[in-house]
Length: 107
Ligand code: FES
Image 1 (cartoon, rainbow, N blue to C red):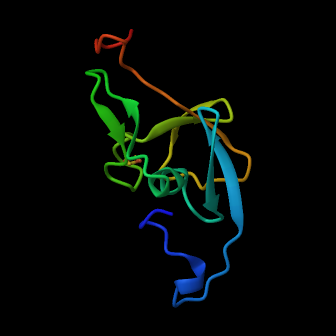
Image 2 (image 1 turned 45 degrees about the vertical axis):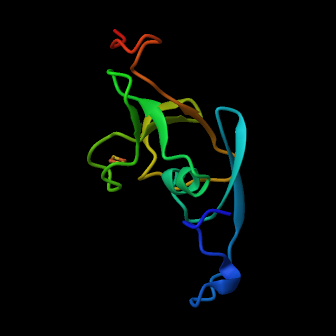
């Protein structure tokens, strides 16, 4: 378990977690209801999930829906901000990239 996710049993707020599972590029990841997609990814120790046109890794930058660095495709809907979308059980997330294999910008 990641240090970013406090286990419910040791949470002083005594929250009750409802687990969920999403897939990211086919890999199952578990989270809890209420987490954003970015929260599920970060809790799984994935800090970057797309590439900028230069090939540089991108993930959460602002965390508030402003920078669009965290874009993913969710259930065939492109350009979803992972920091703003709450994860739903069964979501199929695929990563996006604007970089080509050699790091040049895709057209
Ligand atoms: S991290 Fe900036 S829009 Fe999602």
